[in-house]
Image 1 (tube, rainbow, N blue to C red):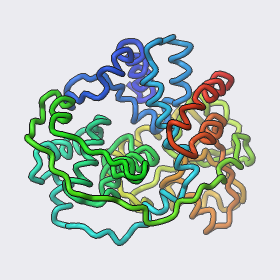
Image 2: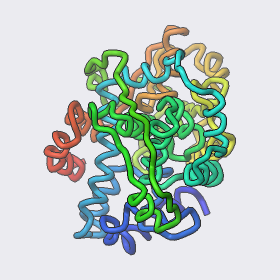
Image 3: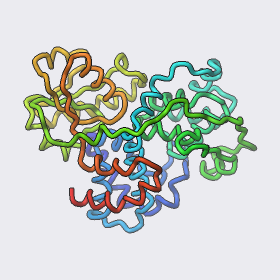
Image 4: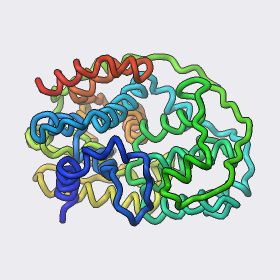
Length: 378
């Protein structure tokens, strides 16, 4: 079965049979081999095989689901996280450039190998490496344990997640770690109790007490608001296009891509990445890219080191905007090094929604009706 078909089937199955219990059961993690109420759609949404706005539209029009408020809100959290970071790209730059972290190297090695004194934490490390996925509630427990129990830098934990998660989205992962650590919402840390762990793990983890250190994280760099992203649109401006693996939404690209002479799709190898990915994650991404390319005659996968030669006589290139993160860092560096004019093609819905993501989520939430209206119009 193709990944696109798997994504669509998973979405349809969730929308028809699970979404009504989502609000009630979403925080329970029954274990990696047990069925739960969460959707397991995030790897497909991260690479946009499924588009967030399309899912919201489906719920309202196609399935006409009544009891879906909590799930729709969770989709909007993803949109909000992206928008928040697009308005503050310096957060990513600060994160990626942090070099002087002070920590216990031996403890760090024990943590990433699941060899700590905490059995519940060790099981999460094993699950992450085996399945390239963790339940969202478990990710919060994991991050809290990493920061406040083990006392390790949150940046290393976020990079550990990036390495192994199939759904390692730059905004959702990075900002969620910041939220747990008390940086995203200043002073509001996420700490959990043994009873919380026992209840929501369905009694799989039964510990007497969760011990946390008194740790208070501080923002070391200023994070200015920026508005550069809003100077872009979706209109083609060149005969050539570059795209990456984190926007492969066939339905909205099948009419756009054939209008180009050539489309280059790039999947960065670890040599070009600031955060190295596991073989399983790179293989998953490659499978998605290979499947996508079969739908077009003019799409060619090109390796990053070959881009200079392929674009030698091309001065202006469009890109499907990949968002703040590894891919955009790569193309920005390439643009500056080779003096190319790069035009970002950004989805209309994204630009509209991100305008409301300059403050907290609840301010963003007030504008969800406007965003919904825009989705339905588009």
